[in-house]
Image (cartoon, rainbow, N blue to C red; front, side, top):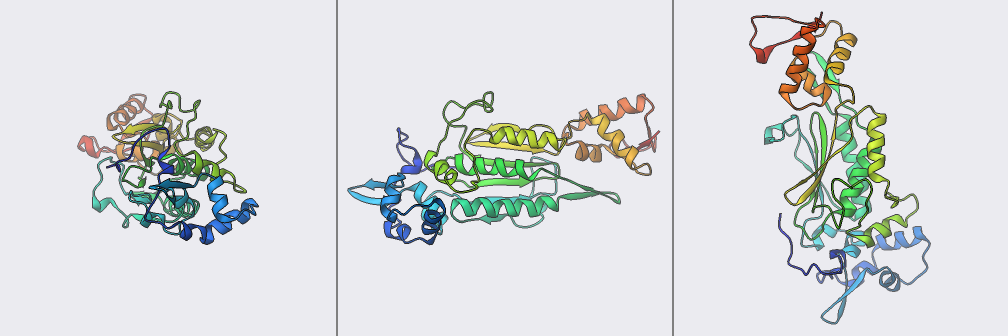
Length: 324
């Protein structure tokens, strides 16, 4: 992931002038016209953009800046030198190191101005998550995630990412989790430890402009991640996991129930009395990736005589259990 050379001074990168886009292109944009109508502005387009700090000067000339192009250019991904699309993958695996053969289809690349980008990405994620299921023998296991939680994480990724970095946002839908990776580490004084309490906007103009719309995608009152946590909890899933990896911020929503691995195993066998369960299936059902933790849970249930091993002669990797 590379970054354009620019001075990281007091001005956010969203205010850097884009010389490749003529100001008239944005002034005449139907996207800008639609926005002005929706927010009830009667200002002349150029004056409107100036008042919103969406025009910047360079070498004595005026240009739309990064925030302006992202909001109102019809094809911002073609105009801005760094990548600013969203890529969405569906991966038939639970492993972090995935291969091409794990892709169910080629990754979808979502382009367009920010509001359209977010809406179209949400639709694509919904399409793939609604179809997220896997077979364990003849048993079809379906995964479910609260739509509002996914929406909030995606909106945060788009409006708070570092647009100076040359990478797209990546949404990876695994068999047991959804990962949303946004270019740039946490901004300002926000850390993983205080992320629920603190707020700092890397792109304040973009945040403000989206928030000014009727029924905005972002409510801009600092409740986004609380909503994610609460929606996951209501769905019986564990809280989101936050990580900084290299030069990206990653939010992972696991399809891991709040219940213990043992509870998940017994619940499955009680609801499916004729079925058997393996370590692999238990990991997928519980969202617990650690093969040894699941192994210990199975051994504990076996020692308590709640489950029984089907074939004592099987190799440990092939162990299957039924309800005792």
